[in-house]
Length: 329
Image (cartoon, rainbow, N blue to C red):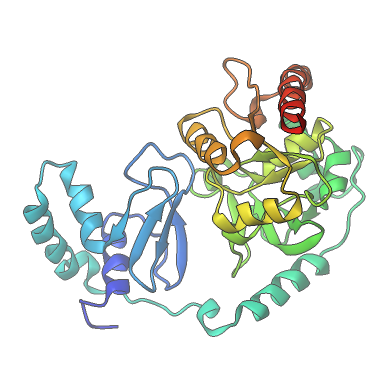
């Protein structure tokens, strides 16, 4: 790994230079994108192959392009950015950066799946109640209550107490009843600023739809895992999380294979990225597409209360009924 022209190491050094990596390992990482107003990690960096892609702003490229894009904010042109790129590779700050091989590289996806399955199912199953006596359980109940979730929802989604204190609660990601991995959620503000969610090694978002959509005529599509829980909390079970703002082709294929006549309701966030993702869903599903009727001022499912949800749900249902009648005529 001493060759400065190794693409993976180039990107590692560049990200380290700009203080965007907490540790130096090969593999894939999620980081805060520096090219748009990112509040949660939306950029995937592949430190094996030396490229990056942001799901938020669609920026993509290699280490050189990353530097040129960063330095363009400082007024440098592409040629000057190229010069800066080679200065970074030879800089004192990056001279001692050693790339470590991750455990994931040495394991097959099947091994990683088995480890994730065994880890989650090895944790104690909990019957959640408001009067939990265990301190860790009380902490989760209190945190989730503040966010509008009750114990019935915790029981329904299979929430457990995690060993990792930074990410104290863990949920299974079930795709039509099949375990696909787990996701942990932090309750610590300082940790949340860096990364809200922690996924098991080997998990692939693009191949997973979190939820049960096998026997649905209508399915609500949301971005995050907690968005899905909010719909469940308010009584809607026919909801899937795509774990991002843009549905992958494999996720799309799963919906179509489940039911070609399914009506897809986009409940993606009511912000710039969510609206972009909704347009993409409209393009994919055409006449089978409906937009969730967000009330003015509500950005995402996390901001809804029961009364607001009921009002938006009724309005959406009216549109669904109209689309359904049109499709049958």
